[in-house]
Amino acid sequence: MELAVIRLKDSVYCRNFSDLSGLAFFSARTCQTFFVHQPLKRAINLAKPSDEMSVDEFIDHFHDGQLATVNELEARGLLVRV
View 1: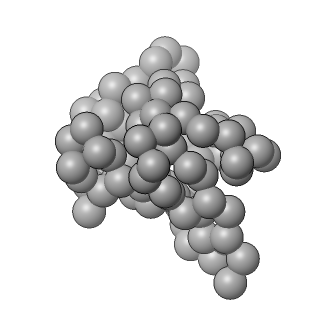
View 2: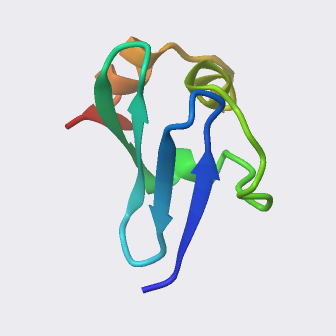
């Protein structure tokens, strides 16, 4: 199984598994794990998995016409708390 690891600034890692339909990551701010579905994941540039970003910066990469909040993404079924 091939995977890319994104290191977040708060030393939390999120792993992108190539055989899954999205991306799971842990938010240290909310102490919750989220799963990002494939359509939303495609909107994020994961070409440089060594880049560091905070969870908030990670969320800020999601655009669908306008910047979406976690709750909006969750309401549309693109982001799921697990």
